[in-house]
Image (cartoon, rainbow, N blue to C red):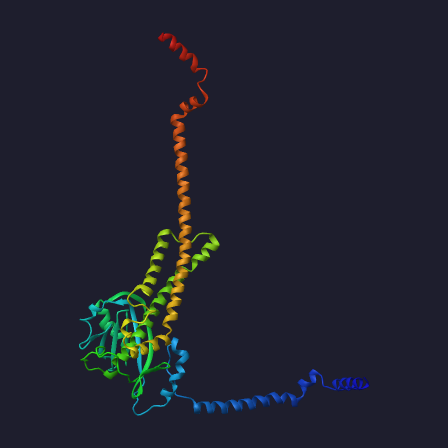
Length: 401
C-alpha cells in the first residue's frame, strides 16, 4: 500500500511539471517537428511517384461496363507484345432498331456479303473517311458488329447501308453501343481474356457442314470466322438488350409519378385510355424480351451441335452478364405490371361507382315522372276518394237511373 501511495505521488509530481498547452504551441522545437515530418513525407511521395512512373504498365483502353471487373486479366497480353501478335484493334457493336428485316438488306449490302447462319457477313468494309478495312456482322435483333472499325466507321455504315435499306423496324431513339478489342495471334488459342478477344488456333468443329465450303476473301483470317461470329452474336445480344433496358427505363420514369399521385391526391393522374396504352407498351417490352425469336436467356440452337462455338458464345455472354440483366429487366416489368394492375382496378372501381350514381339518378328521374303522370291515381289507390268527389258521383248514378 505504501508503494502505491509513493507511485501516485510521483506521477502527480511529474504531471505538474509538464508544460501547459500554450507552452507547447510556443516551443519552437515542437513547432518545427510537423514541418520536418511534412518534408520527409513529401520526399517519400516524390520517390514513390518516380518509381510508379517508371514501373507503370502500358495505358489500358476503356473497358465495357460489364467487363471492367475482369479487365485486368488482359494486361499480360497488352504489355507483352510478340512478333506473331497483331496490333490491338477495336470491336464495335451498334444497335439502331428493335429488329432488322434481313431480306431488305440483300440489295443494300456491299458486294461479297453472304448470309452466314443468322447474320449477314460483310467480309470487307472500307471506311471511306479513314481508309481502314474491317468486317461487319449484321444480326436480325437490330444490331451489327464491326471488327477492325471504330465508332465513326460504324456510324457511317449505319447511315450509308442500313438507313437506306428500309430494314429498320422500330428505330431506337438513341443508338446503343458496346466496345471491345481483339488481337490475332496464330500461336495462341482463341479465347476471351479479360476484356480482350484473342483470335488464334481453334479446335476442329463437330460438323463439317457448319463451315461454308466457299468463303469470299476477308480482311481477317478465315479460320476464325465462326469464332468471330460467335463472339459477335453475344455482343449483338448485349447491345440489343441495352436498347431494351434504356426503353424500359424511359417507360418507368414516365410512370414513376403514379404512386406519388396516389399518395397525395388519391387519384392516379392518368385516364383509362392512357393507362391501357401504358399496359400495351409494357406487354410489348415483355414480348420483345421473352417471346421473340431472339430470346436473351437461352442459347441459340445453332450452338448445341458445336461445343467449341458454344464455349466462345457463353464466355462472352457470361462476361456481359446477359442472363442476370435479363432477369433484372423481367423483375422491372413485373413490378410495373403489378403497379398498373392496381391502378386499373382503381379505375374499374371508379367507373363502377360512376355507373351506380348514373343508375340511381335515372331511377330518381323515372320516379319523378311516374309521380307527375300517375300521381292522382296512386293517391286514390292508397288513400281513397276525397269527400268532394263522392256527391258528384252519386248524382251521376241517380241521373242514370
